[in-house]
Length: 278
Image (cartoon, rainbow, N blue to C red; front, side, top):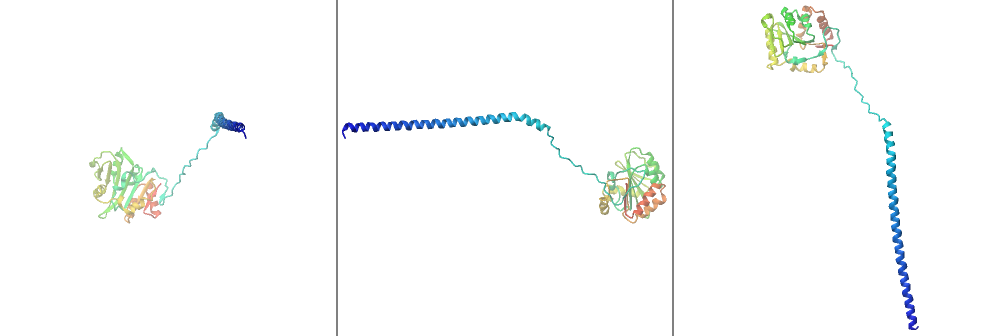
C-alpha cells in the first residue's frame, strides 16, 4: 500500500472517531436534558398536588365546621347517690313535743361523771319544767327566768350516800344569782349552768369537766355504744348500770309529764340500756 493510501485511511479513521465522539456528546446532552425535564415535570406535578390538597381543605373546612356545630356531643350523666334512710337499733319514732336536733351537743359528755347511772338529753328546753319540775320549785323558776339559752339540755341522776340527786346541764349565757334559788346548787362554767339539788354532784361535774376525774366521754362502754347512735334525735336515754332502774322508777313516780312517762315506759319495754327517740 502506498503512503498516500495509508494517509487516506488514517484520515478516514480520524473522522470516524470524531463522529463517534460527537454522537456520544450529543447523546449525553440529550440524556441530561431528558433527566432535567423529568425532574421539572415531577416537581410541577408535586406542586400541583399540594395546591390541590390545600384548596380542597380550605373549601371543605367551613362545611365540616357547620356540621360539627350541629352535632351534639352527649354529656356524661352524673348519677347522684340515692339517700337511704338507715335503720338504727334502739331508735324509735314517737309523736312528742320535742324537736329533732343533734345529739351530744356542746361536748356535754365531758361534764357527766364516769359512773353516772342515768343520763338523758332532750332537744326542747320547754320540756324541762314539766319533765323535772318535781325536783324543785326553784328549778321551774330558773327555767322561766332564762332568756339566752340553748334548746338542748341534759339531765342525769346519781346516788351518793344512799341519797339520789339530780343534775341539769343547761347552756345559757345569762347571769344567775345563786341566792335567788336557795334549794339549788348552781355553778357556772363558761356558758354552761350546772344545776343540782345536791352540791356534791355539782363539784363532781366540775371535776369531770376539768379532767381531774374521768367523764362519761371516756367510758369504754359508752364510747362503743355511741358509735351506734344516729346523729340526730329528739331525746336520748342511757342507763349504763343497774342503778339506773331506781332513777326510772323515781321519774315514773314523781314527774307530772305524761309525755316523759310515755318515753320512760317505751325505754323500759325496749329492753336495752339506751334508746333514741326520733
